[in-house]
Length: 380
Image: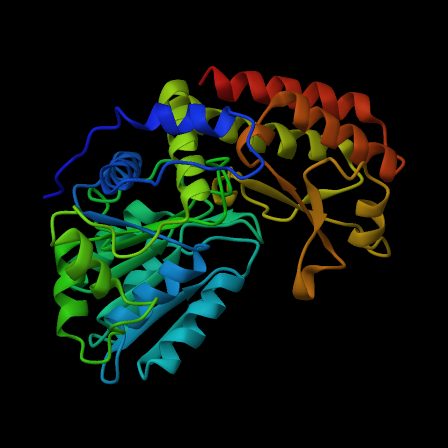
């Protein structure tokens, strides 16, 4: 079990940042401060498992988790509900694992029954990779139900919760998630340069037993376990990304002060208000058709035939959190992000007003519908 650390010396670092200095001459981040931030992440994830804060964007721990757990002879069920699922499948294959892809349309979610059926069809599956919320496509998957069927099957579950953390409930231990990866840059409203992964005892056993798991590598979770976690978190194995770590700590402090339920409620309300407003607008439509499948962190919109998403985005104020989709969806999809501070009624209203002007639609019905949906969801 994790040994928690005090955060009493961290405010001094915050004050140092506020001092005017062209050199940012900060005192070194101590091992105790680093460990305390890990403990805050663990609390956010509702886990008693080991948490490792990694010094890079979330693709780092995602790839590290897959390369630690996958190996020749293993069979992975890779659930594809968006572009990140496709990336995970490529990594799994490069590790020599046999990969079974379970793909669903990007405008919907996968069901627990679909996962159970895939597991029944291939009893040898011992690893499952899943994205909680796909910010790129705006869908979200029922992790609690999926986790139950994966655990019953006996497989290890890896979850990409980068876009879902702080936007919707995430109960890592209760849902049976063995490897849970998060990043700070979306709903948490924090930095992109650090990320984290929680590792269950089952996951550690598998990674330790894997002769192909990275060692003496930036992708090695075992290096962190041996040199940091198991060593009592007393001496950092390398110089941390100090500013990003302090930013992550500040972000976690803010979430704790606001209360996680309130932060989640704001994201849920922002998504509901945007979807209600767009439906009233009439010129656009939600890309994810069912409300139950829509992610709170970002709302994706389908553009009408003949109207390129890039053209609409170019007519908007660049300060608005709206952008065209990527890849094959670049022409037909817009994404309204509700990251952190953008999960507010004022931002939703500004986005709807901008979209109305860009598509020659009447904004008033959209604004009224958004206000009603916001109130209903915040008070729910």
